[in-house]
Image (cartoon, rainbow, N blue to C red; front, side):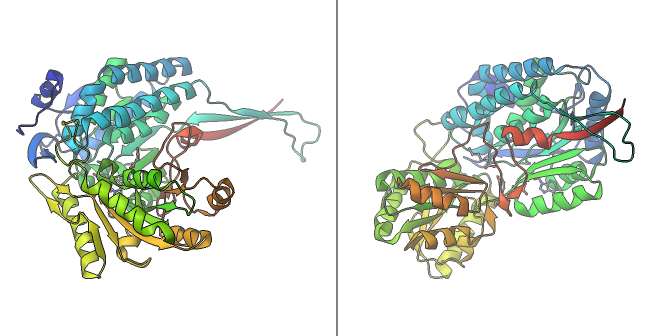
Length: 497
Ligand SMILES: NC(=O)C1=CN([C@@H]2O[C@H](COP(=O)(O)OP(=O)(O)OC[C@H]3O[C@@H](n4cnc5c(N)ncnc54)[C@H](O)[C@@H]3O)[C@@H](O)[C@H]2O)C=CC1
Ligand SMILES: CCCCCC(=O)O
């Protein structure tokens, strides 16, 4: 075990127990007895192991979710009770916020201090927002008539009903937050859930499962299967008993899931990759913009779907802004996320470290200039915060998601140039504009092809604002009223009086 272990005894106790999946009311091993280990990215050491579910385990979980949805205390529960349960779950997460943050830090590498005020708090706030929605899922009535029955009277109305059994598959960059983005609307609308966390990061999902039971949810409402994407993930995606799939991860896998879902006409929402531009205009507050652009790419080690991984700066400020960001990068303290003074942790895995350093080396081969950082190191899976210049729009570094602390930077000459370059990318998740010229900003916002646009900030999220992408960045939205629509079906009712 790593020497950098958590401060809370309950966190250590959690790590020391035998971790099992939650299917129905029981904590279970995989039927085959198969297990898979997960690591502490800060040291590379094995942290523990969980069951590695196969199709038969996923089938048991889906059946438990179906049973709970079709005929249980849950299916008879009224919206106010669903509201109160979600609020109680949020309260329990708040009680155990530090433990959740330490588990996330140990399993993902991110700062425990940041995880507590960002990942855990955003998840708590979102569940409370969704608790409010439980009692506000409304239909509507409409005056209808039938031309072929002119003398008859009718009453028409529209019901919004829970979609059913939800299969949720999430990634490793925000394990708890992504799980709660799926769990919140599902539980608010009366659905039931089978969650598969990422192979690398099962810990906070397991703790969440414990809190769901402690909150008082009936058995089978929330089921947790741990396992690999190719085994448990594929089985869940293809299971005919799943009414809706919700996925966060790579665009490559998202496409596979979307295609598989259509075989069963399973409803599907996909929150995928990104290559979001940060645009620093001629009138920007340059110190604020440089600090904001650095945070936009280096927060969470750049492992953020909407990270500001492309920087476009008005030509007259380009050299200064790049130099300021490089200065911030060179001054960052990298290390174990349990140390509150650490500003950047490791990447999630050796595979991810190799992927990111591979892109940096590709930049060198293509003649780009490494303005700062540019290398990985261990033990653990660290990559220094890196800024790359002397690239052009068609570079793979500019067109492809790197998903690490690597920023590519280019100058632009006018607003049209900036908009064209920002949109010249297969992704469309987020974008930020740094300017105090409201006319220019309001002219640009409608022209930017992305699901979120931030002004003088980046990656700022609120439960009420839908989050999701244009183009290769996904289908559908997380959060907001839009999420309620994705977890419900509409039913039209017409009664001849
Ligand atoms: N948009 C985002 O938030 C994220 C984007 N990514 C991108 O994906 C790249 C690769 O990261 P990975 O961890 O490999 O992401 P991934 O997309 O392969 O894995 C995400 C989740 O999908 C599951 N999965 C994998 N293959 C599956 C399949 N065929 N069917 C069903 N489930 C499957 C995994 O077990 C995990 O739970 C990253 O470098 C990054 O570019 C990765 C994570 C999050
Ligand atoms: C706080 C930002 C969360 C972004 C969610 C994602 O990377 O999938």
